[in-house]
Image 1 (tube, protein in one colour):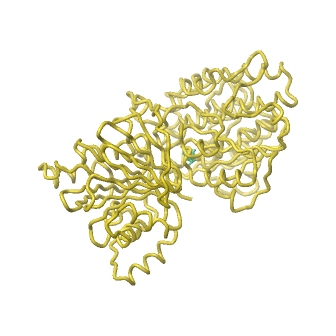
Image 2 (cartoon, rainbow, N blue to C red; image 1 turned 60 degrees about the vertical axis):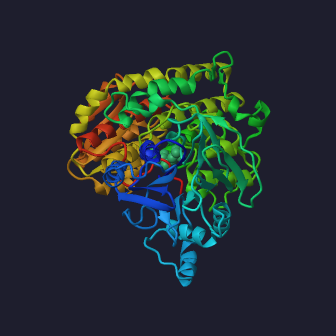
Image 3 (tube, protein in one colour; image 1 turned 90 degrees about the vertical axis):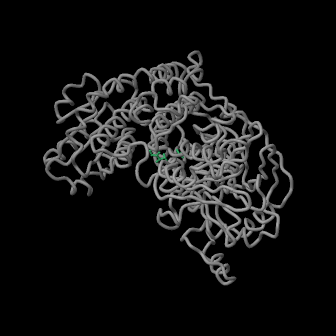
Length: 613
Ligand code: F6R
């Protein structure tokens, strides 16, 4: 989603800003722009399209060292919300005087009424964006103190924002603020970088300050001063970035997605390492911060998330009910707070998110806390908003996930959910022996995944038979039903094939009407209770001409023979098997998308971290 970079310091400002935008490309965007303070005016350059285009434009128009003396600037990658992804709608936006420039992530919900009022005061707008309205509002409030102007403007705003603002009257200074959209400030040696994501900062410094909601920062090359929106000073600790530079490179793979699929055995080993207790037949998840008594008193687990993280939650639902004998429910995070859910102190809410910044999941977390539930997070990005606001939880340790399509985060989420369920289960009906058995199965996950990754070339061959169609249907049952949903999501988001996942039994209640000669059906027919019924559902599809790609358990040749093509999934506990099964579908989606020539790491219209509701 949108990305912000701001810089004050001695280095070549344009280069730092564009380098930072490049680091944020993985988040997904459709236009980009940069603004600098040059002596006593602001200069702006914007393009519709990629950062490479912005770089070329800047080189062409500013390449004569004209702005070499600039010390301050802001830049942005925009993921369109209000208005199409044109150059005019790209950020930075200027106020009516052209002296203030602003970049913004989030949504100004009352921008229409603000715009009408400003127009009544003689303001003229060039773009369709909510952000330009905010820029004009700051300009109108500016009576010679940019900090105060930003505070006054933000007091009039409803919605969410992460902003960075500069004024030609105050060179050497950036005002940054957040409500609902992350802002992190890198504190360097004689230079300071403002960004929406630490990825843009790591090349300059490892020392960062995360803004909390309603914090506003006055940023200069040598200092960061923090206040709240009422001008009361606040203190935030300087944190040390733990970002792995190598993980942010493709390392010889054609795409980040392929690299991240291959990284899964290692990522899973990191997620599991030190967290299994074979003696007690349980797991050690100290971040949960719960005593066995508190766990024993829980009445329900509510899992919330969006997209792929929601699918991980659906596997978790099976795990909690099956292993821990506790009532479990999955809630779409976007719906949670609007549904007025019944929650209380005996409910454990687990917020699942790779980024830890997803706006809908964050809103659900806040609602859960409000209702007195026991809220914890299952997040990958250390220090992200959801992990900080829940204050307890379990990190995935999957390493940075750069490709927009989530892969290793999903498998690590499921692995950690299994360990959570094991821990709860041991406090309930699970015996030590049963616990040990499951712990041993969880320990095998990296090796099981390795066995699927090793089949990548074979899956690439199979993908050739399925890459030309425009539709595909995924079916599964039991814990493989969420795997079917996730397989369909992976395929549709990176290959633009219309794909849907169904419970295998649901087909004949409607979706089977979609099947025609050679329609691809990807059937997850591994050993789970009800497999025979799934085989019946597969026959129903074949009878209507569908072409079947089956996921079957290792050595199950009888089932494999029912399929047109098949991929073998190693034999293991049925909940554990969801992980290698999904890896096969990730590879399938990858190879189909590659054959279709799609832009795999940055699919059209998608953003890595969805910070708007
Ligand atoms: C799909 C995908 C998305 C995310 C969703 C939630 O591949 O990546 O569906 O899973 O946007 O994001 P997080 O997990 O960051 O909360």
